[in-house]
Image (cartoon, rainbow, N blue to C red; front, side):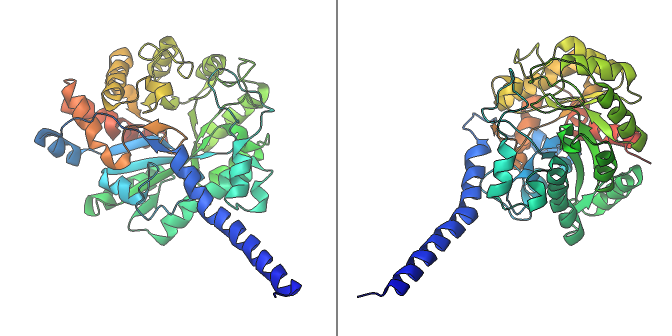
Length: 391
């Protein structure tokens, strides 16, 4: 008969085993269930597409991959992005965005700022440092640290770009080493400031060069497109905008209320970004702002990056994504359109980053020229960065 001491040890070890298993295996399962690839008809790849795709300089303005517990140097069978798949897809530039607050029951209509926050739960589940549990700024900095470590440990495969000179050096290096990825950092909403302007400098010092003003909630800077107030830019928001632009941080209004977009357009000293979106005239979704505002953004030199999920394009298949890109080109001009996948942003998409050649083929099938395809697949992103990264 087992003694009470032995029984206690067995129970204790069993509990420890279950707890360890939960923190080791559940994050992967959550990733698999959240960042999906759905069945979709994909076009047959022609030799013309293969030749053109190999010549492209591809860039994507929005991926939330740093949020997840995934070794990006390994190729995975789930999720949308890792370094091997970026290389396979011939991606040259990837903007990695850091998510710091996201509501339960995400919707595009209205979210209360007091709603339960999914990222707090994710931080606990993934055993993020204690400092991230109550600080949104620390969450952004922690996610950025993953990218900084990759660039330090694997300089032949990953290069962090924070300035015009970095970008120029990267282009020269990539001519010799086509597998080299240029990595940039941005925030998914300025909740990451924790309401403190000094955090703009902290984030800049850690490599952030793009900041979006809102995410799913209204915040201290102003109203979200998916918040409750519909308000414009606040005085704090104006001060934050001025500080960001004085440092050379690019402004992203992809989740901002219509009034915030109008207010920012009126006072911004730089063209704006919409890092992941669709066009309301192509897809009348509450996720998409009116075409008229998109035209105003483009008229001031801005860049509009189209996403791959249902909220952006309504029917998330490669042909509709290509049609959304073409719609944008016809609305505002091909020089103002780019890619903004929203990969790994809790969305379901028809192809991952290794399969971008299907989008090249779909654009060819719509009759777009090689020049137009080169522009939207990455040429416009490169030009924008060459103009607007800090010196």
